[in-house]
Image: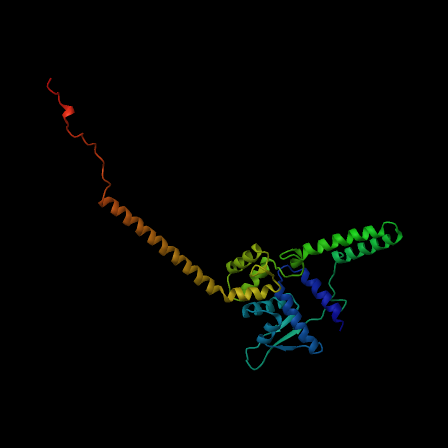
Length: 275
């Protein structure tokens, strides 16, 4: 069996099915790995615990649904077993023959291939110019170093290119597999997007799934802290209101004294003296 041609045709077919998710591809690759270990003989026997672990799928419902989807799109045949002592059987269809080969469109050259081609062309052209070669190389090396520094800065484009910073949809899928709502995934994404995907505000993130698992472990702690903060604010507002009420009550009981004009004391200058 030509497994390279088989995988090429399978991936081409998967590209034409928009409903397939990353976990579908991961699960199929795990099944193909088991099939390869079995020397491409059908059927293969699988267990849910082992297959979920290899495919990095955390939810049993997602696992079963992915198997059914792969069967629906004619990639495998899934025969579930309800006997705990016997695994389920999976038949993988072959796609390495000419009759099963789907029409694969010509792929557009990647940006790496284009950049390498342009670099080689420039290098050949620079070999013909001797007088200004040193100046051009110095300028290019300086710009490349600055460009590399800008890409390697925390939260920069290099992290996204390497897959360190995932899209929001991937985070929602991962939180859903772990049994958490999408709102919690949105909070996780907003928090790290705002601080440049730094751990502790200093260290660039290397594994977003590990950070997500820590976030899930601390959800109850976050909720307790928020509840304590609300209680403190409520108690503070109650104390302030009671102080204001006491001050108003004291003011009403002891009104401020009103100063009244006093008449001058009688003196001899106020009467006519006899001549």
